[in-house]
Image (tube, rainbow, N blue to C red; front, side, top):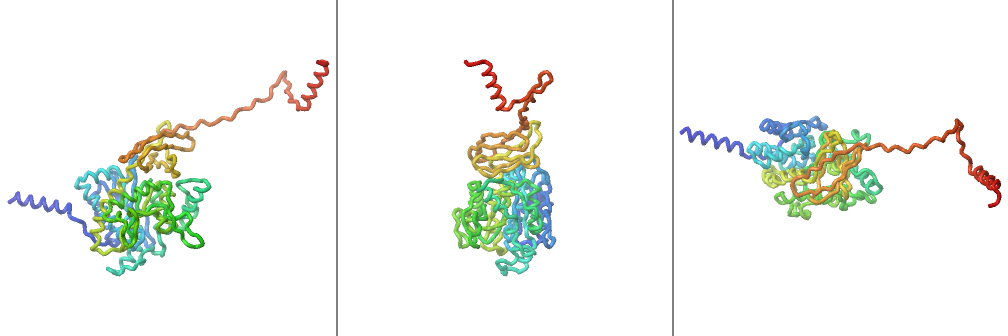
Length: 459
């Protein structure tokens, strides 16, 4: 009898470990409780932190997954997911909570794929960038979600039209010459953006993010930069035109990874639209200015795509489980894409770490930089590349590297200090017997030659 009881209790415990999470919508207090629940269940691999507050004072909480949460490990890349930027687009918010519980549970269950992902990657999950807008949308009640109600923040601002416009500068630089990365912000940028946007920009400055996805709703497609077309407006009308980045092939690959791992996105026909392979260049769909996706690429080292995940912006609760099952594998595969291309350390000749060294790939007009600890990450497709590391006061170093389809290739740089070029020193006029030699004018020299010729007589 005791043996049967023991088996029953063991099965009960096992069921508890693998029992599915509750599929329901989470208001702000529920969201916070869920994040701290995951942190309590997996304290060794998680950390909850706030990047700031919304207009109405709600925290913008992030859940971090890492084998050393809160610590940057050299050569371990940072990845982020951002959900619920538009408050009425609720699926991304719920998927982020489901993903958080899934990562915790699978790590505890020793799922080797998840264990390796968490050991090799620092994952940051922001379930809601716009908690104020969500509360407005959710307050309508079931089946009464207006298409735009709750989309904006509490100040009525669309957060995905609120980042500094750096596209104008990069398009000018591409045409006339200028920086191709880390474009500076305007001096007054803080006064031009909303509290939520300001918090996210500071978050980007705090971590050397390499890869990111921004989760939206209202369509089913993986959207990649640029979002703003080269000619955004012609005679006051927004112009739609394919506007690729220098990393266009890489971005298409990242988008396809998500699309083809998704349950149905890859099919293309969704929500009355058709997107081949389930992906699209943002500007070829519709031109969008001051978006977060382009800002990541132009101001930081981060490559971000936008995931439109549901036809219904605020799907019914009974649809959440189906949506989770359709997105689960895609969410994991996308995180794994950060482990491709090249990475390494940039040192000086004494093995001191060099921050902000520029990593340039020949033929791709977009550079990245090393982080505060001297490590860098450059996402690349398989192939052979000529790569240079450049830092002020040091001689550049250039190598040829072959990138494979699996793990990133390690490429370290050791830069030597430049030897200052000394200008040739002009000798002072000679002195003989204490008398300063005089430089004769050309006319005087000519006259002297003529006098000596007359003294010699005819030849």
